[in-house]
Every structure is written in C-alpha cells, then in structure tokens.
Image (tube, rainbow, N blue to C red; front, side, top):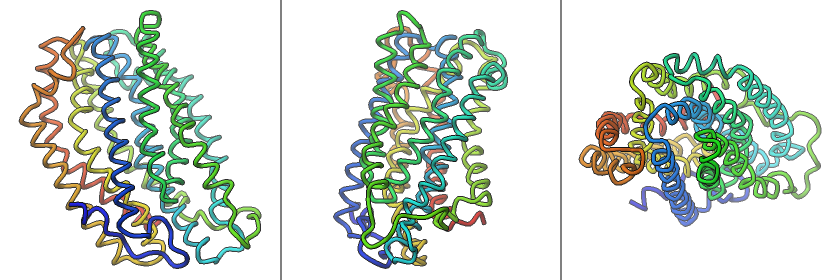
Length: 407
C-alpha cells in the first residue's frame, strides 16, 4: 500500500522541490497529514458529542445546525475543494516559473500581491451581507424551523467564517503548493478545539449560541495556526538574483473568471445536498436535522481519510500539469484512485455493518437517547452507500481543474 501512496510524478524543470524529492517526502507528508487528520476527526467527534450531550436532538441543536450550514459551505468552497482547486495550481505554476527563472520578478509574491487583498475585501463584504441578511437566509434554508430567532443569532455568529475560512484556505493552498502539509492538516484541530472550549465554557449562559461563538473563535485560531508558516515561506522568502515584483504579474492566469465560475458551480452543486436535506427536515419533527447531521459526520469519516491521499499528492499532479508532464500526472491519479477507493470501501463496510453500535458508543448519553441512536444509525447507512462515488469525484476533480481550463 505504501508504494502506491508515495510514487511521484516527474519533477518540474529547475532545482528539485520538496514535492519532487521522491518517495521519502510523500511518505512522510502522507503519514503526518493523515495523523493530524485523524486527530482533527476525533476532535470533531468530541465536538458533536458535546452538542449532542448538552442539547440532544431537538430544536436548539437544529437551530445551531441550520447556522452550521454557513461554515460547512464556506469550508468546502474556501478551504477544501474550491480554494484548493483554484490556488494550488496557480501557486504551482508560479513556483514552476520561479524555478525556471522565466519571470523577471518573484512570481509567487506577485501572485499573492495580486490576489490576496482583493479576495479578503470581497469575502469581508460577503460576510457583512450575510450578517445583515441572516433572517432571510434562515427562512430560505429552514422555513419550518420552530425557533428561527435562535437560528438567526447563531447564523450571525458563524458568518465570520466567510472571511476567516477564505484566509485559511488561501494560506493552506500556498503552503501545500510549497510542499508543506502539516499546517493545513492541523487547522481543524484548532477549529474544533475552539468550538469545544466555547461550548463547554459558556453553554450554561448562552445556550447553543456558545457553540456558534465557538465556530467564530475556532476559525480565527485556524488563521493563527497557518500565519507563521505563510509569512516565513511565502512572503519573506527571497529568490536569489531576482528583484521584487513590479505591478501585476502574469502569474495568476489560472484565477480568471472563466476558471472561477465552473469551480464555484462544481462546489456549490456538490454541497447542495445539505441545503435540500435541511430544507426538507425543518418541517419534520424536532431533531430530524440533528439526526441527519450526526449521521453524515460519522459516515463521511472513511471518505475524509481516503481523500487525504489525494490532498497530499495534488501539488505533485498540479506541478506535473504545469510542466507539461501529463503522463506522470495520469499515473499519479490512477494510483490515487485505486488506493482511495480501497480505503473508502473498507470504511463503508464497517459503517454498514455496525452503524447502531457506532452511534451508541459515540453519542448515546445525556440528552441523546436510544430513539435518537436508532434514527441516526438508519440515516448513516444510507449515507454510506454514496461514499465511493463522492470519493472518486473528489479525486478526479483535482487533475481536471489543474489544467487551468474550465473545459
């Protein structure tokens, strides 16, 4: 199995990069990132256990989970699929140009100067609009919710993630393209720690709003986790013999509207399942949204672990595409598909066979009772049937968007 994970694509021209140094580098990167992902997943379970124990599967947890739609969508669009699909290839191309000395300035720093200020400003405006329009958003997402006011308060607290997740995703993409994976893999540890801490400390005073405040605090901790590495590696690094970049450089051809539109459409369409679920479940009995959420979080763990393989090798694929080595990229993707599919199928079998026992061990305590366990386990088995398809789509979309062309 390890031989499949660590085989690399052909290196880009110029001095060898960390991604192109062969099997030891990818083996260490995959192991380190997978280890941190497991820790983050365990903390995510602790987070869900805290919410389930303190608030059960009722109107309070349903209100929080409607608000949770905002960071859930923001994470997919701005940290994982969307931002990574756009920026890892862009930074990989800039690094290839830096290595080949084809640009008079530093293409990496020029890319940051050209894109980051505009991105941060746009996301700040979007977050402000979401705060102002929170009542309308809740009404659209969950029109049958029993306590919409509570959901509105939680949504306004979680709206800060539109900006903070965007900055986190930008930093993560830059570090991954440079061959640094531990920081990006560890951001969810900081995120979940913030949510757990705020929930346990303030739930007696703020109720479920404490969990929403924890989302905001945890998202700021994510930025602080990545900031030192980003500043040191990307901003302070000087390329010997090259002057500082002047004006807008051509290092960001992969960030045009023609590429941005299909990436956003792809990510939003994949996430639309959550919107439909919460819209329909809001008119059902209290706890339906919570059952769906807890089932999804547990069922998707095999997919999350299998996708770490593709996350680590994505910069290799992007660099191979940037340097024209399509055959090397193809071989890398084929091996990723085989290994990721094997991992997720094993996890799917475990979920299908032991769903009630898994839910009982993880959640059945406090306000979360046996009836909630039965409902959640049933939904979890349904979710598990789609894990392989979601994994293969997630793995295949990376080389597709690495070319920098929407078609």
